Image 1 (tube, rainbow, N blue to C red):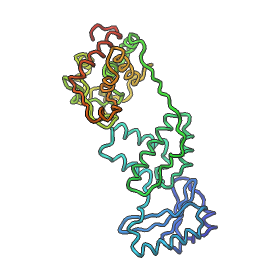
Image 2: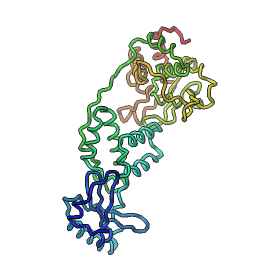
Image 3: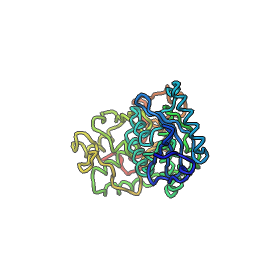
Length: 362
């Protein structure tokens, strides 16, 4: 174990992965963390079975001599009992992610899976790093490295910011380093299905009948892709479909009609649990329906567009789509009943049937 001098600190090489720790031979608890791009002085001590760590500062801004004197001062402070108020060592990104994902009120399983996949795919080399070792420069460079996929770049680093801010509630962390990012501008395609008769011909020619039902259902309900894929029969009722957890973090009930039951009829009896089963999938349900020229979200936008053009008020369309109302009154006080929304669903579905080329579904 060496004495951490200015010369030694200067010669320490940056790690190729994770963080290397170099402990001082004279001042117990003084340690130099060497990451891929930076070197940082810490004072660390175990108190009552828990690691308490204080960041002294970056090298070479903080010299070895200053770090040593600061660490000696912290030793004296802890000897007087001040250690009880010292910061517990910042968690690694992996630890912070797991704590965040364990939240019982996390908005949905798809959000949980999406965040984990993004971190493992695009931030995998950071997972073992303490959060306070991840700098503004690092997040800006990673964001730029994903510039060929602007949406992925933005979502990945915004997920990172969410996890950081959740950890910040417990740990003494500064503002998230993502404050330095210039976010890419994203322009939604906004595309809809212009020719629903063509859509009908394409859907009827899909090889898998389960996929045909899937696309019909999302057109006539406006469901999001995953909301439909993960539907269970126990949530299909005579007058409604119940979604126990949605993107906005709450349950939702959508009024349904005879047309919806007729759409679902071909897949009844295929599985006791899943509406859209897949024996080959680990989840038990289909996860990647056969691709068409129109995305699942284009079906959702088409449902909304046709409903509004048929005379359904925009606010009511938002309710049918389970959008969060903008006003406080809408969010907290106005809760339209299923019976109040059902006539508007009838208007929307009747207009869709007309454009598809069906006077009645069948």
